[in-house]
Image 1 (cartoon, one colour):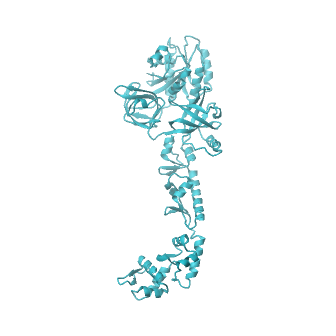
Image 2 (tube, rainbow, N blue to C red):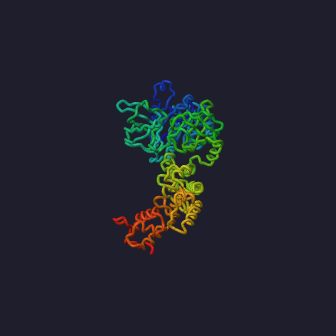
Image 3 (cartoon, rainbow, N blue to C red):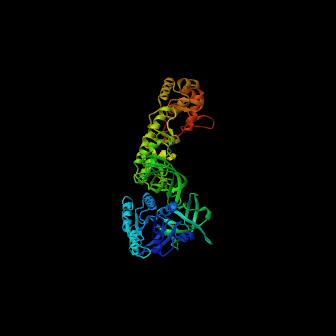
Length: 591
């Protein structure tokens, strides 16, 4: 199936054409049929000679119903633009064309109606001149009279050719069905209709109703009055919803695939088709699909702006939409550039953002967004409407821009070096501190950044091993001079303070292996324990603590600390009578 919307000035024969083409009455309301004027959206369909089914969304032409017209045209890829031969190009025709051009509608057929009332050539010439500078400049032109039937076969053939040219949407794409009607069917419940632009919907599928976020299940599906188990875009569909009241659904809402769209109230956009953002009103209406949402506009650059929406909409980057200023009857097309724009609070932030956006294409891809954000979850790119670029750094559930990742690694090295300078006695930058400094969203991403000469140890990122810091080396040198004449005469706590070996300095020295720190604050030089074992091994076995003290020429405090340390290392062992002996397997002990 393909779907086409009508457009054109009021009373230029749009509904009459649809009736003649389909044999169906598109005007649903009694008031419409009584007045002969379309007031709301109408729907009809026909089978073309090729076998393609073509559905029509018939829209009102009166200027008071522009919002309704845009609700019908918004989700539809092609248009049937009607111009009456006896009236020619009219103001509402111009407004409809401006809206279609702003929305980027490129496919359509120009139909000059009432060819039996007036010579259509002037109307054709006027219309072709207006279309020449728009996206519809290549639309085929047909002149018809619905009253006499003249030209209707040619119009049907033109529509068949149009349907063959229309792109076929991806049936696997995420669903975003803009609701254009909602009503209750007795015995069935709430039913909504809309144009399924892409993706597929099946019975029992679960979709999300936006902006409420409610989960709803599809009870039944119809397309052109036929029950269906599943339907793919593009198609007109009616969905019977389970679990939602009629009062909770309205035109302008959307049913979307869960976790596939970005529900947002703030976007950065590019404005196009002649209306620079600086000339637009600050309060406007955003038309997207069947939604019409008031927005506040903040100009950024000549053709970029930030929109703050008063209703959350499900968006992807690259979405086309229309901004309308009802007071000036001005419209501008927009492309959504960023659905997660940065805050602009610093002086000059808006100008900097405009310069950045000026380098972006109208449809940013995953590489552009990843470059902007630096690091993103893969699912975040998905809900923005982009694939992970092949150049991305693979971080499991995360992806990183290669240039940004290289910058982060350099910054991490700088932060580790600075931390070592600022806190020489507590080497290593804590992972959480590094995460905050690098503005990373998860701590394990810091670990992923680490590569030689950096290393992670004890929850900290360390730089190259340069040995103890200067104050530690100086304190150890003083200790070495102190112990040189008598290696087991460990300084008292007071003397350690005088030597500068207390608190963080002593802890750093012990961690670096520059001192041997034993219980009872006994501090000796590295290797003192092995030297003590060599001396004690010459005593009669087993030996007492007193004999060990005399052999080592030290105090009882130092002797007990050394013996406990040697016992704990398995180099000596304590026998039942309290004496000590080297372990039988003392092959590692020095001779």
